[in-house]
Amino acid sequence: MPFRTLDTADLAGKRALVRVDFNVPVDSGKVTDDTRLRAALPTIAYLSKQGAKVVLLAHFDRPKGKVVPEMSLAFVAEPLSKLLEQPVAFASDCVGPAAAEVVNALENGGVALLENVRFHAGEESNDADFAKALAANGDVYVNDAFSAAHRAHASTEGLAKLLPAYPGLSMQRELEALDAALGKPKKPVIGIVGGSKVSTKLDLLRNLVTKLDYLAIGGGMANTFLYAAKIDVGASLCETDMAETARQIIDLAGSAGCKLLLPTDVVVAQEVKPGVAATVRNVYEVQPQDRILDAGPETVATLNATMDQCQTLIWNGPLGVFEVPPFDEATVSAAKRAASLAKSGKIVAVAGGGDTVAALNHAGVSADFTFVSTAGGAFLEWMEGKTLPGVAALEA
Image (tube, rainbow, N blue to C red; front, side, top):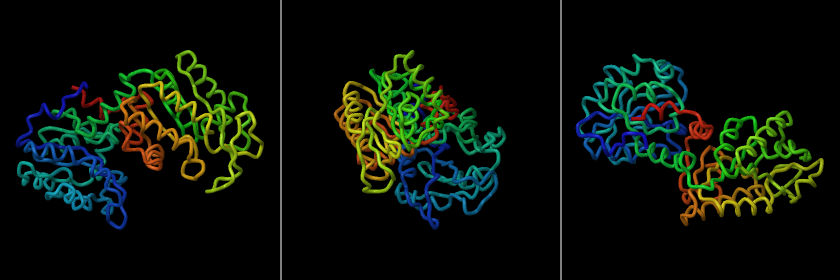
């Protein structure tokens, strides 16, 4: 990896400014899902064990450069302290005297959380003076928030230019997984892209067809591709105005040597609700009143057999309306096959995106994938082939 890694850093007695993602779900002042807190624990614990003074920077919600009391990060200190099994000091500001007082009081190995960086307009504008004010409380900079790496903000990009910069352990693991999936993957490589609309994933599709050996398209967007191929999709969700764009992507895939896997059979119903009567049809036999809500068993069998031949998988988006059984069967079947291949070491399986994480959790296989990214927007921009400012700033 083209980065300095933490195991090469002299950390004892140093103030380590660590950008984390603590934008957690909260209800009545209580954290309802501590996944993002837990993701930061390995880096915090490592720095603390090395004798660094750990100073955490994070944002919460969207205060838009103003102090909004209900968007304070103060509520995070107690649950984080319990997870770390050590005290976490809290500073009422992320710069200035309030921050300096708390940081200066830290002993080696101590941990402090500073107030929401987005209380200052200079954060999102990546203001140089604000970045310098943040840097005043650190000797080294560690970015452990891949989920915020697609933003060129003061705490994600500006700071990395002012202090020796390193990826945190969570960030490093994510970057290594992504490099294994698209950077320098073992071939053949298959991608699965689902979701409702082609229009939201144009950049992603155009980038992937130039890098993959196979690309399976599912979800509502598959209907648009079928329509573009002059196949009647009945009453299904379909972006008819994107048909020409879909044909362009089909042509691009052909010229790049990427084989597209479109549904050959589908599961249809006339409404979306649990337990509704559903029918499997060949794609050429969809009726005017039918709504395509999942890929059919023949399509999934072809997808699973293709995965068996590949060494790398990258997945974004479900194959059907997985939230409403029985339209979860294709997604669950493919997810279980991918997980089995990954667990046995036959394939590197990397997945990401909000619906994808939920779908894999629904299938009960997230733990068996090589890597599941919860980064959302940053993961998608990486799949689109875009430069992520927070990552580029770490390059040695």
